[in-house]
Length: 603
Image (cartoon, rainbow, N blue to C red; front, side, top):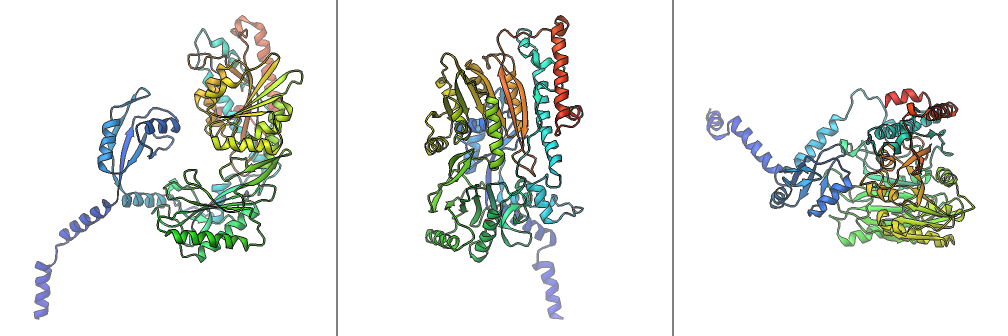
């Protein structure tokens, strides 16, 4: 009875009431959530500019850690503490950038809250009606066209070219200045597209073609360490990794390397890297397996919680591990320590050579190219040979004239070097100094002496382009996925020596702005006479995926060209009808274009 009475007293007086207990738990939870605060400043009302321009602007203000999605009109700047955040707000709030008045506000969040949101987002992506196997989900992520036969893939890919060219014509319709609109009279033709779109060109290889692969090291759906690909987009909260065994585009050697590395990390007591918690060791492995049979492996580790002596031991163990693999001859083994927050192989940390020279070699159109870990090289060599051969054909070198090939955004020099024997001189311009050094070495490797390279921005190096009498200058522009800065297009237009340009785009949708800048009428920003597209073709370098290359030939209009309104010029009406007929014939003869008019309505 006494024990019972004491229990009643404890219940009433000694223990907390449910409301008090809940309040204390909430207070404790809030305190724990604020232990690790991410000090962020939200900057809104941003102008519509590319990420590089925004990054440059904020860097000038002293801020380098930012996050912005493509469709956001705001961004987040991360700083070290609240004091720096308030200083950032003071500096940017009300600041005018590209005629927009910015709004900045302190928006702190905790790492715990961030992870909770990430976890909820991940759960939200799970579709209970999704009956696909894990392998099918991975295939849909990495090779979204794998369910289609190749002819259907090419039809879909050619739509990218149709839409891009139609978008160009639509954008040019907005330039109505009476003084200059005659310069784009060709765009007012009644044809469906502004130029001829030739039949799509397919890849000679459809599987196992990808010579460069970057694998994530993480955990599979059974929480086991695995080397492979993410089952979905990380930004959508998907962090599970599946081995690439059934991936159609990964070569067998790369699959073996991923399998062996999975065995290695499962035997290791060091954990795999957790992208959400930002903890762990093993992060990424990159392979390069060119047609020459050579093999480059780069292994990336986060060493934040690993003693230096243990890192050294792991390097020695990795060397021994790969040397024991009799079925894979590793040409060069590389190692990178990266403790930053961004994922993937980075150029912000040095790469250490564990075995070999740090280089491998690839052969293309009879030439030999040296590749390092960071060297850009197309990942489908047979299809790349078709692309570059078609580019050389379109350059249409006139043997009666001296010819200079201007290789813009030349990278390691592949395009210019493969065409060097057909021209008198090659000038390569690239803003990445390391790529220029590779280009010079590749020229020496192939005993090519008529090339000159400049490590510079295109717009700053254009003065090196000087033509002599009876000399033709042809430019080739093969830019990154997001195209080039408008200043590059401005420099090309302002250099009247360039009369033809071959533009190779790996993302035609993003290239439309560059196309428009090339073709729009003269203005203060674009002073030179405009170009007009004369022909285009889609070339597939990436079977099983939605990506492809669109190559467009642009020719500069002549100063005397003057397109009159059709009611004043019966001749033009006749030319329009002929142009329409030519386009229709091109569409009818192309196996890859179906119902172009339907596509344009869809656009």
